[in-house]
Image 1 (cartoon, rainbow, N blue to C red):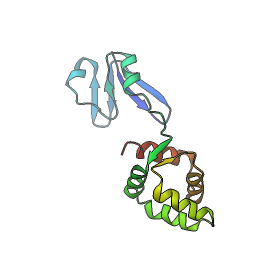
Image 2: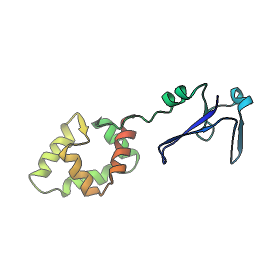
Image 3: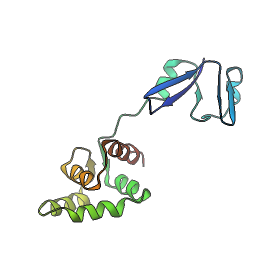
Image 4: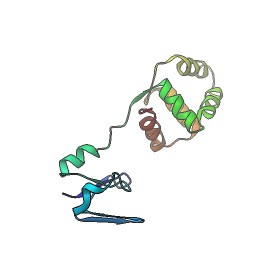
Length: 138
């Protein structure tokens, strides 16, 4: 029964059957039940199946609520930039976008408004994925 860690950059599940050493810590299999997990992202699981379930990458959110979107943007100091981007849109897109922004219950990843704002802000697909993933849990 090994230690497991999800490596998001490599999209891999790392495993260490007997021990893990890192800056300021060393985990040993025979003492696995004495540690408070996670330790630098490492966990102990009794099986590969258990680790795969617990450390599975959640699917990317395709829609979030307005509350989630605005909380995320506010938390990261981006709310004013989105509102400024809305003001920069040309008519009649601007008015339609403002109505969407003020009254839509949900924001969908594929909505033309989202695509227009993302383009104005210069966000990459990874940044948009992060926005939807992190906002989706607020």
